[in-house]
Amino acid sequence: MSSIKEYFSGVGKGLKSLVTGMAVTGRELVTPKVTEQYPENRDTLRIADRFRAELTLKYDAEGRHKCIACGICQMNCPNGTIKLTTKMVDLPDGKKKRKLDKYMYDLGSCTFCMLCVTTCPQDALEFSNDFEQAVFTRDKLVKQLNYRPEPKDDAPAPAPKPAMDPEQLARIKAEALAKAAKIKAEKEAAAKAAAAAQGAAAPEAPAAPAAPAAPAAKEGEAPAAPAAPESENK
View 1 (cartoon, rainbow, N blue to C red):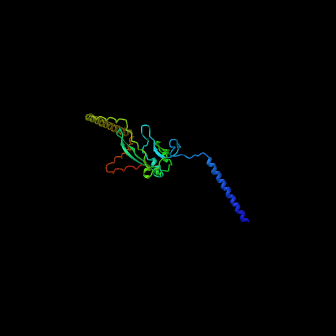
View 2 (view 1 turned 90 degrees about the horizontal axis):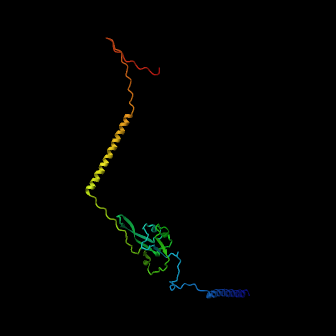
View 3 (view 1 turned 180 degrees about the vertical axis):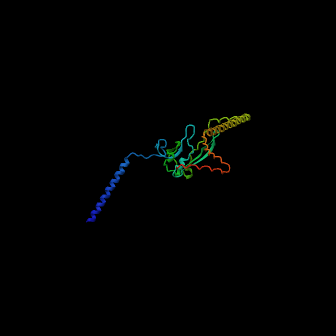
């Protein structure tokens, strides 16, 4: 009898579960759909501005970026995603400067931690929200961020200084040597004068008192011995 009761109890619970599930399915049949019809809706698809899809360099209106190749982003990257190559260039004033040659970025190993963006001292990096980065080979995920051609500097190079006349150069050297010799002579004279003044200002040492003369000896007598100095303790 108990087994029959348990059988019908199980059947009732199963039917109740079935009705509950069908009710949920029925509600979803009449609920408006929210599925994005991608890629048909690319023109109207809105991606959040804070979505991190790909690292990029910031370019201004003239096509220049602000990266100075300091290497801070490369050092802070936990996965070694960033590789910088630098070069030395000659400036118009004749000096040399280190400049960015290649900025290589591996999207396949990027963790999108944004450490490179937050630690950049020049604010030269940012993440774009272009999420369409699917490719067939991993090699295509390695990208060069400074792919744009570098604009040429409009500032003209400074005119070279004219060569100095040999006679003028010799005259300048002679004047410099004469001035140095004069300064040296003045220093030596000042040192001698100071030494002479110091010697004149030193007090003279007192002379020792002369010993008293012995009395003259008579004929046939031996000369008397000098008297011994009296003791101070008397």
